[in-house]
Each structure stands twice: as C-alpha cells, then as structure tokens.
Image (tube, rainbow, N blue to C red):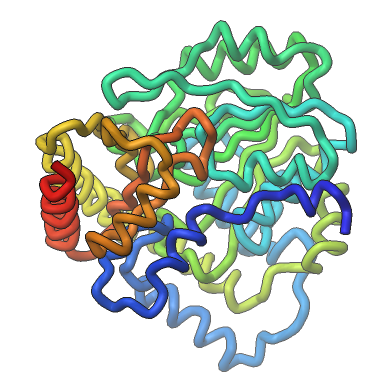
Length: 386
C-alpha cells in the first residue's frame, strides 16, 4: 500500500456513527443529508428510464440533454455558461477528485481553507501533494476569513487553492469582495481555484438570484477556475451520486479522459432523474431552502440558550457548528453524547485541528421537532455533568 494511503485518517464522523450502530434510540444528526426522500417526480423519471431499458453506457461527459439542462440552470443564476463547459460526474465527491487529478501532481503545493469537509484535504494528499491550510477565524460562534493570511499562504508555488463556500461545517460564506480579492490574487500567482459550491442554493440571506455569491459571477471562461456542484443537497438526491463540473474549455477533454478511467460515465437513469430535477427546480429547491431555514431558526436559538454554548446562525448550508465550553476532545465528546445522551453529532476535529472542541449538527430534518428533542437531550446531559 502507498504511504499516502496508509497515512489517511479514517472518518471521525463514521467512527461516531459506528458507536451508535444497533441503537434505535439515538437521534442521529451526524451525516450531511436530509432525512426527507427524493421528490416523487425525480424518482419517477428514473423508473421510466429503467422501464425503457436505458441500462447502457453514456457519453463520458454526460447526456447532451443533461449538460444542456445544467447549462440553462447555471446560466439562470450566473452569467451564461455554455453546455460544452459542463461535465457530469458520478457524485460531487467524484467531481472534486477528478478536478484534483487533472490539476495536481505529486509534490505540488495545495492550499485549503479550513475547517472543511475532510475529503477536500485528503484528495490532494492521496495524489502526493503537500497540503497547507489557512484557517477561518471564529469569534462568538461566527467564522470569518483572514484574507491577509490567505494571500500570504497562496504564492507562485501554490498549484491549487481549495475553497468550500457556503462552508461545511461552519456555514461561512464568501462575500463578493472576498471572492474578487482571491480571484485577483490567484490570477497574479497563476494558482488554480477549486471552488466547491454545492451548497450555493442552500443560502438564507436575501439575494436577487436566490443563491450564495459564486466565483462564476466574476470570472472569465478561461480563468484557472473549476467549480463543483452536486444534485445531493438542494434536490434531496444524496444517494443518487450525481454531480457536475463547470470547467474552462481547455480542461474539458482531459476531464472526459479522467472520467473514462475512473467511472466511465454516470448511469443513464440517474441522469434522466437529474433532468427532471432541474425541470422542477422551481417547485423543489425553494421549498427545501425555506424548510432548512425553518430548521436552522428552530435549532440555533435553542442551542444559544444553553449555558456555555457558542453558536451563530449559518448563512448557508445545513449545519449548526457550535462549541461547548469546558470540553476538549471533540471525538471523545461526540462518542459520549451517543452513549450517554442518545444524541448523534459530528466531531469538529473531523474537519480540522482548529475545530477541536466544536460539534456539527446537521439540521436538515423533515420534522423540526426532532431538533427540539435533540436539544432537550443535550440540555439534560449538560445538567448531569455539573
């Protein structure tokens, strides 16, 4: 086994979840997905495709009709993106890995903004890159970007900058001014940007286009910018494993080759479901966002009222990221909460060492009352620690 693989850390989130296996009394909020099933119109499109016998290979870059649909969807939110720049992938995770494979060689320097979903720092490490991090800075439960620190970290030696905003786990979202500053700096240094924007529609601030600020709003088609997306979050399709990339034209053919050697193509019936998802986005996504905002606004005030809790409402995403004063090891704390409180949360140090002592709570619950019950369990557990 390669040393880079041997040195990979196992998922701390999975480790906590494993502690709750076999217990039906645990309220689980550890994984980043809603407990609501995919809308029927999307499921039916996949069923219809299977009934038509569409069980064969597709184009490496995706069905032409899906690439066109994604281009229309993207262009309705941002400046026009041509379908020729879209690559359909077998999940958002695959989209990210394909981008890293296309851009990073062993020994390259990669900078990532953290805390962040651990796959984003693991993927370049798997390829033998040297990964450096720039930490968001917490204050009163709110995380912000130290732009000066980021500029200092990203130099002409930096091959790739990885940014996830809206951010998992913190909910931090880049401002337009921060994006422009980062883009300008990376143009100067010749650094590629990998922007993970899968949560862009799960944004709770008022905006004209109903989504978070995107690098696509300010970039040129030939910029060294790759944007990744997924159908998982805003279309309730986590288990379908379908994502996409928005690429500069010069990268498209190479990504097509990499898709061939990784997965060959995304399955046709899932792509038919994705076409239906986009066709019905006006009735699906706004409802999802409104419900998630209700969930956020239910959970965060209850958490903030607990003694010793630092938390701020997330501007985007589906997580409350909070700190419990007086508790050190996040992993140990999360395991204790499973066993002693029947409450399943993700440990903050799964996302970065600087998030030690923090916990992530996925509030994407079909029934907000589950969130209330979870807080009551946490409150009772905290009282028992005195």
